[in-house]
Image (cartoon, rainbow, N blue to C red; front, side):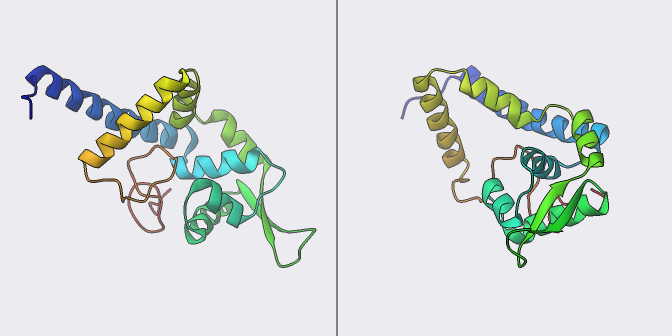
Amino acid sequence: MQPTRPDRLDDSLIALRRILRATEMYERDLASAAGLTPAQLRVLQIVDGRESVTPKALATQMGVSQATVTTLVDKLVARGLVERQPSRIDRRQTNVVITQAGHARMEVAPDALQQRYVRAFEGLADWEQAQLVSSLERVAGMLDAEQIDASPVLTTGEIRPGRGGLDRPDS
């Protein structure tokens, strides 16, 4: 094993810390500007992009359980940002639809951190994308984080009912 240059080690730790801090600052900005958690914003974005969506489709797209989506949708319904409506096609199915208040909330929400990342990532050459994914997966492995369940929502909290940063009772 080769010795690590101290400045490279510090540079790598600084970069990791900057990523964590950017995520924390985004959460605070989002809560302040729109009164939403990143997961709630993601639900609104998905619903806003469609006429309606089922909770199962939301869970699949977000990479979370249906129970988590139910909790997120319950909070958004309580705030009048989305509504549950019976499906016109299948009476057993319920669809989630954004309200006018939800549209208004979307207009004041800051640009989602993952949207900024997606735009920058898509601007990279294919080989750069592959290299970046490989490097990030390597970092996750170095932190023994490969088995941690994660969805494509950049946040420091968990996206599970009753746990950590995204599902606080006041959010």
